[in-house]
Length: 553
View (cartoon, rainbow, N blue to C red):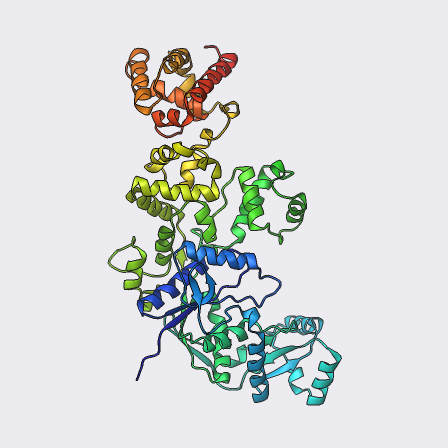
């Protein structure tokens, strides 16, 4: 007998960018299929017409591709997809769903229901008042065929409900959590077709999994309760039950659920505490701003939220895959870390690549306990990975990142290799390289100096201050004929010997503060080369003039 080929599927609803929890599910499905020489399928569950969007769908494709998680079967995108079980968008399978719906109607497993939302709310409120669990009363199940046809001919809004069969408890065997069961009386006659003529998630997913040959369903534990409805449908259709594996949820370190609303909370807290009355520099439309402030239930679109955060100078918590890409993480590092949130490779191994994952992945090593997302650990992983790659690879990947997220740095042109090498060892992420180097792309006149403790220490503290040494520093740097890191370093060391008893920091740090506006930059020689001689001298002179005007030198 030929063994059935393993087939897993990742089936997101395109209502936003790919959440890290969904990404972990996608990775586990992909790894299990690859480990068993199986088929990995991508399906887009877009039956929620109000929330689904083509933009979000494209974002899912891009996020998966960035993680290097290609799919064997599904929508075609950059070399992935295709197959004989399409279409792979549920919104394009409506005719097929109606065919299978009719099978349930004919077999007595489903019936039309005509109650309005208002009527159902009355029943729910009554149940709440009587302190009992609400359960649909099956009033429509007793309608005659003539009445049903009359209502349909009149165009009366309707849904289709699944008629839960009588019997004992519903039992599900799960490869991760073990046997779970629920009393049949706790499962209501649930809706399987909505008033808009589209199937619900429960109906479509069961039909598609069966027709597409899915053998293993790996998903988050938030879907565990849905599984009881799914097995009822599978049994009613006569479909073979797939193997279910429900993995633990991902939480924040404080135990709260890692939610897309975390970004919104961060923005609202900052705006409230800082009394921000309008979006800075019109970074988002006033209409969006006003609607957002008016209701806690309204969230800004992803692009608007990022634009507002950038304008306010705050970092939003990374929640979606694209957030981590935007933050400058390596895809292989995020993949590695997400696997540890619910799967254990054993032998105290924590850092590994995709090949190791495929070779070692199995369901029996999925961990039941909830996982906590430790950003500090992820950052440490990313630093380790960046330190291991060559300078050439760092430059290549930083350039690709800057092209998408920091295009002004691409304009460094032939100086970009120096910018990359100067930031390689000191960067935990690609964004680190640009965040600490923004002074390189600012106009000379835009550089300002906050009188912070590090700035005062570099320029104004000591018997002989850094500011008092500035004229000699400017004169010596102006005399350099070949503006290169080596000649600059020699000049600064000579100045340190003559002005500060050989203490290089007492010369280099005032220069750094003067040209960068703060105490952080790449190595000083590289920094000045990247700026160029004219900008360096201009900034040093402006700094001297500024502090001479406000301080006694």
